Image (cartoon, rainbow, N blue to C red; front, top):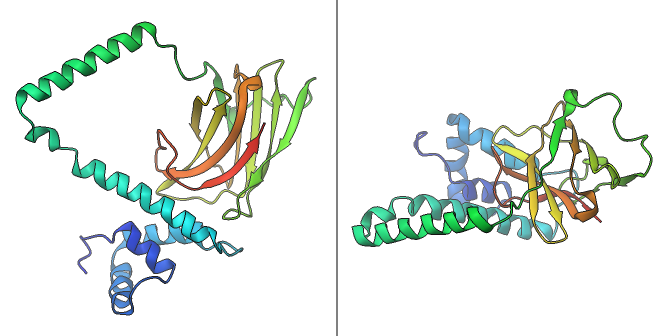
Length: 238
């Protein structure tokens, strides 16, 4: 294999799960010895797939999610330039429709995200909300793929504050941890989880705690995703 032609992500996943044909195994291993980028991707997925506890039946579910994410990305890339093949009139009609929709939504649609402030790690004040009156403490529930992840959350409905602390986060060069805050009306706020020495602290002010339905984390491509594509890492039900 040419080093310039990188391995597809699903090939690396099959290699780690030992689902690859024997005659291709040597080619994959030879390429990994020569290609630094593919080796980094291999190490990253190895962290996700080879935890201390076996994945058992959840391996197929995780693999399905991974392939679904890859297929979406490939379809997006393949369709990126398809608009050039369409007649000019059709393109103009689509552009006009988009501008009309944007105008209507700007005039009548309410924002779907909360107007909160967030501070992280060293920027969080020494005196936070743990000792404040009406503060509730909740423990996170890690999923089986991330058994070493632990942490807690403090929420206060009277002050509209939330503090999240997590430990056991592995550094992944090509992926980020992402936080998802799901409300009772199914609207969602999301933030990239800042990792510092395997831990994180995130402090939210002005967030509607009383409307929380679920808070959870996931593994996403670097920079985060507008919608969840990777596996869950933990969750908290309200």
